[in-house]
Every structure is written in structure tokens, then in C-alpha cells.
Amino acid sequence: QFGPDHPNVAVCRSNLANILSDLGEHAEARRQIELALESDLKQFGPDHPTIAVIRSTLSIILHDLGEHAEARRQIELALESDLKQFGPDHPNVARCRSNLANILGALGEHAEARRQIELALESDLKQFGPDHPNVAAHRSNLASILHALGEHAEARRQIELALESDLKQFGPDHPDVALRRINLAAILCHQTDLPRALTQIDQALAILAKSMPPGHPHAVTAQYWRQRILEAMNPPSA
Image (cartoon, rainbow, N blue to C red; front, top):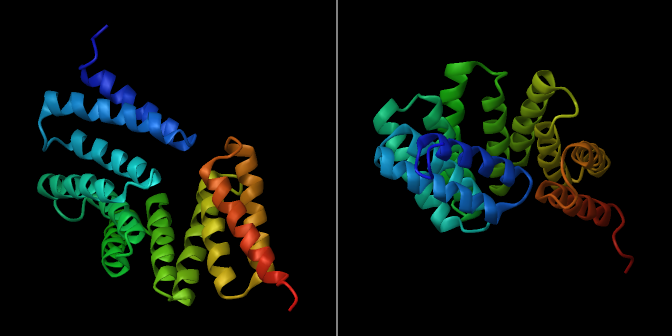
């Protein structure tokens, strides 16, 4: 109907990229989102809010592909644009800060990652209150960063709040609940609360078996932690 450069086509490509990413097909997801970005840059220029959304999606896909430096560049461009357009307390800004925190964590910049995610959490708590899914996602990200910083008790508190909230919002079988359980299991493993860690990871795997294709990255991560927990529970004899 419209040809390859129409905004509607870019929206479809962006949605397809999100679905492919959820399926673990990150290379094709990247191709689709880069086509969407190229098209909308032509249509709208670099400071349109749609461009920031697409850059944010691209940064997540690049992060999943291990291309953290380029992921950081894309999300920092998105954050700069959204700060200009909306100011510091808009949900789009909080979303960008959360994505940036994940990427900074992967780059080992945990202190700055913590600053960004705490700003995102503070902002979305103001906007939405404590039980919104965005707040749970920020708490989960904060828990991962605190865990990397060795602050395991506070990490556990944050991820338990996120899990409690997502259980209320989505019920026990939602993929987000599985992600919270994986995160909690990792923290419990480091706290040597191994039986509870194993329970959490098994519950996560059961959810993912229903909702994700075999070999999905989330399932691979859960299997990794299950193996770590079992090895800690049954150390090799001297």
C-alpha cells in the first residue's frame, strides 16, 4: 500500500523486531529495527519521539547480541532526545534510564548503572505508584546491579518486591514472573540459601517451558543458574 519508507511500515517493523527478540531471533530483530530507524529518520529527523523509541528497542537488541558499546550509544541518544522533549520525569525517560542501566552493568560500570536505575525507579514511583509493571522491572534491574555490587541483602529486598508486584499484576505463569524468579534465584544462590534458590529456578523453568520456545535465552540463563545451584548443593568430594 505505502512502500518501504512509510511510517506505518516502520511501526510494523518495530513490532516485528520486538517479537523476534522475544523469540531469541536477535539478528533478524536487529535487521528489522534498523530498517525502521533508517526509514523514520528520513521521515521525522533525529529528535522525534518515535526515533527515541526505536533507538531504545535497538539498544536492547544490541545488548542481547553482546554489542554493548553500540547499544550504549543508541540508548544515550534516545535518552538525550527524550530529556529534551519531555523533561526528567516522563515515563519514556525512565525507560531509557533503565535500558542504559542494563547496558552499563554489562560494561562493568555498576555505580553509574545504579544511579540511572534509581532515577528511573524514583520517577516511575512518582508517576505510577509501587505496583505498576514498570516499577517492578526497575526494581528487578536494580536488584541485578546491587547483586553485582555485592549488596545482596538489598538486592534480595528489591527483587522480592518486584516478584510480589508482578504476581499481583500478572499471576503466577507470566514470563515476567519467571524473570523475577531467575533473578531471585541468583541472589539466593550467592546468599547460600540454596534450597529456596532451587525452588525459584524450577518455578521459573516451568513458566518458561509453557511460554517460550526451546532454547530461548531466558531458559538458557535459568538452566545455567540451576546447574550452579546444584553444584553448590553437591560440591565434589575432596
